[in-house]
Amino acid sequence: MPIVTAEPQRPVHIGMTGGDANVELSVANTGFELSSDELAGLFDDLWQATRRADKAARRQLAIAQGIVEAHGGRMWTSREPDGGTTVHFTLPVAPQQPAATG
Image 1 (cartoon, rainbow, N blue to C red):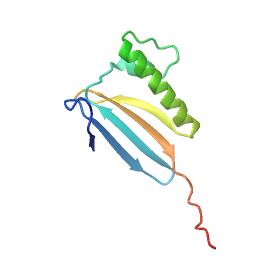
Image 2 (image 1 turned 45 degrees about the vertical axis):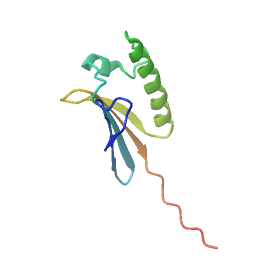
Image 3 (image 1 turned 30 degrees about the vertical axis):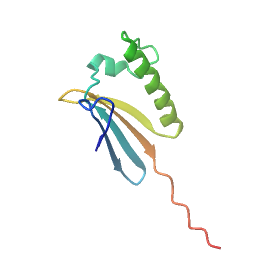
Image 4 (image 1 turned 90 degrees about the vertical axis):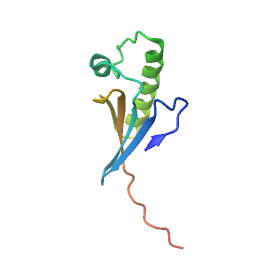
């Protein structure tokens, strides 16, 4: 499902799939493409970005990864064949709580 952005020519797409134990979310941006080498080191603490925008993205992804992992999930990236980068993450599904009676 596309989301309206400040740059309409570069829409962001958000996807979600669910299972019994986890839900997977993905955010795809066709305007922000990283090389295979950049993707491989993106979550590595020693990875050094060369462009200012990449440094900001790295910090933001590191924060997001910390939050996802603190909640029992995991985070990774992939390149799209037609360009762009997708960030994927999973989060565990919360167990159903019995309905309160009263």
